[in-house]
Image (cartoon, rainbow, N blue to C red; front, top):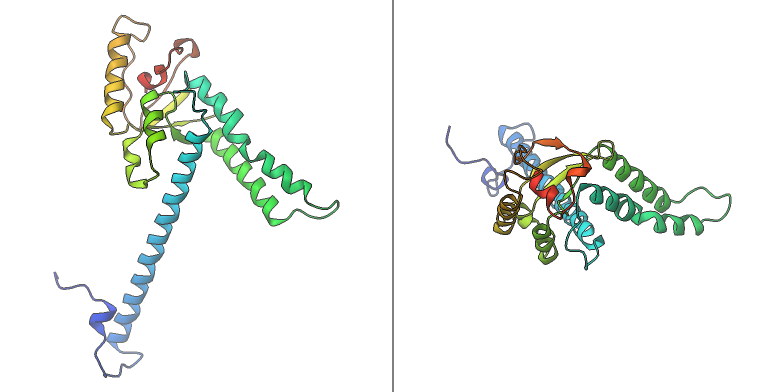
Length: 224
């Protein structure tokens, strides 16, 4: 009823014994459980953020420095298949080579194999990654210092190996450079261009298109 939250500190009374079945004992147990749950949630969020930062960093580091952006959606799929998915293959081969003939796989080898299989399954169904067809987005990611609180600045899309001509915008990105780039590309394309009739995608929407409609860097971005 608007009172203070009961904590372990507020429950305890100095030099006063507490019966294990008392109301205060039950309150203390609930308070301890709440603290433990909050600590667990905080730890889970921290691990999630670390994993997400590592993955995004890997995406951008695998893109050669001399490439300002991938030219189109088809190129993004090719890059995922040729660069991102096979990045653990050498590590797996080394783990297998170090195993003596006839011996079962070690935990390390099994873990690598599971990671490879999980990522291939993820790509086949729905892989979320930065929009690497946007030069502005790529530039911002290369300047990023790895702070998870800054992830809302970037543009993210979701693609699928099963449906290579479709994508979903999962986050537009709030950085002004992305907005400016989008406006410039829209002005360049114009209402009479080959993109006439296409609407700008909003977050959460998905679309499909023919690869023939892609060519110049940024087309994927404009259609998203």
